[in-house]
Structure formats: C-alpha cells, structure tokens
Image (cartoon, helix red, strand yellow):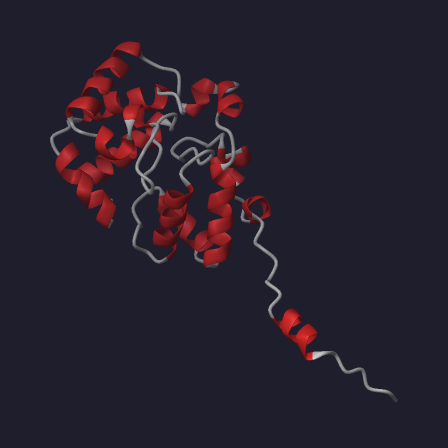
Length: 206
C-alpha cells in the first residue's frame, strides 16, 4: 500500500491552524444566562444586572473574579458554579458578545420591570450626589462613559445598583476596585443610595 507523504510545509500549516473561536451567543444560551439576565442580557429579573452593552473589559474581569472567588458577595454567588466551568476564551467571547447587544428597545418595551422609569425628584437629588462625590472621574458623565475597565452605570437596574452601592459602602463587596470606592460612598445614607441608583437607572447610555 502506498504511503501518503504530506509536504512539511503543509504539516506545519495544519499544526498552526487556530482552534475555532468560542461563540458568545451560543455560550450565553447553553449556560442558561437568560434565566437571570434575560434575552441578550437586556431583560434581567429583579436583582440581576443588565449586561447588554456593558463594557467588555469590565465584564471579563467580573466573570474572572466570580470564577476564582475574588468576588463572592450577593447576588453573584449563584453565578460561580456556572462561570467557574468556563475557560478564559469562553469568558472573553461572552463579554465581547454581550458588549455588542443593545439595551434600547429590549428594555424600553418593559421599562418598569427593568427599573428605568421612576421618580424625577429622586433622580435629580442623585445627579447632585453623583457630581459632588467625584463619581464622574471613573464612571464618566451620567455614568455613561466610564474609564476603559470600569462599568457603564447608566441604564442599569435601580435595585441592582442600590444593592451594589450598599455592599461597597459596607465593605461587603471588597474586591480591589470596590475598595477604591469606599471613601466616595461611605457617608451615604440608604436614602441617598436610593437617589443615586434612581438617577443612574434613568440616565441614557450613549
């Protein structure tokens, strides 16, 4: 029987062929992420964050911190068994895909459930708090244009925002980045946290 001898150049080419890239959309479906974060990350259930259109670098860091236990405060504990079974390439694919998803119409059709429509007076007070406490320095104007690896806060669920601000204030959420915020939010009373969350939930993403 004749042996087929492949040219060395072809063997080298086959050996260098990259693995198929992870598919963020398929992973999102396979991991059941929609159960909490909704279709395309834009319709979360109560207490869960909107992921659609979020900063990809930030999303990747959060998934990594949840997987390795660095971030373990509520409500992310339930995510650890799911995320720790993904590899770095899969997390990046998820983050990159979610960052491209649109918040707009998906949330606009169910604004009350998404936590975006609310009290104008409370939001105005929250806007003052946001400006007076230097939040713009990292999160950008109205929480919509953050630094490269900080979260977009504009358009986020108000209940999730309030829970996380309180967790940072009370040093329950104590990752390195969260600790940097403690000085800014330590003095906030619960009513002020609610005002800030109201303002950010009503802010428009750009």
